[in-house]
Image 1 (cartoon, rainbow, N blue to C red):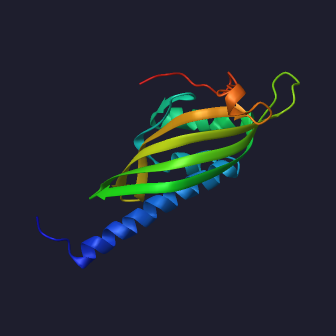
Image 2: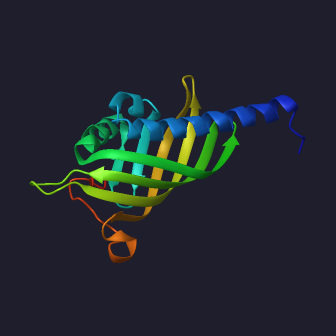
Image 3: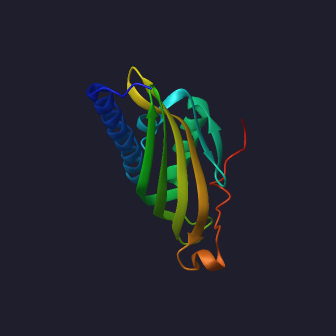
Length: 169
């Protein structure tokens, strides 16, 4: 196997940086009110967002519905992405991040808002498009999603039924 040229090696570094930036920008958009069109534009037309807890959403129509609904449930959030591993193979890439989120879920039926802490691993597939790197599949494996009052030992999965989506595919 021939050694990569300096230009090819530089391209991989630039691609990794662009993918990291896309991922960080995604988190920032989630933290600033979920501007739906900006988030959905980060996905390919056949893109998917899949969670072991929160549902599965395929294609831009389902993604638009999901991101339109989220701000009515999760009224504030701060996403922290750490330990990125990004692998680039031409016009395809994968990345893995560990994610910690603190958030506020809206109380239902007059109940007070609920402070939430969530930990997850994100496994993401991406594709280079004419517009730049885009998410093809965004898998969120939630390890725990707990109310801050009870914590993850007593309550590993606090689930607001309004937050869960349909499992489709």
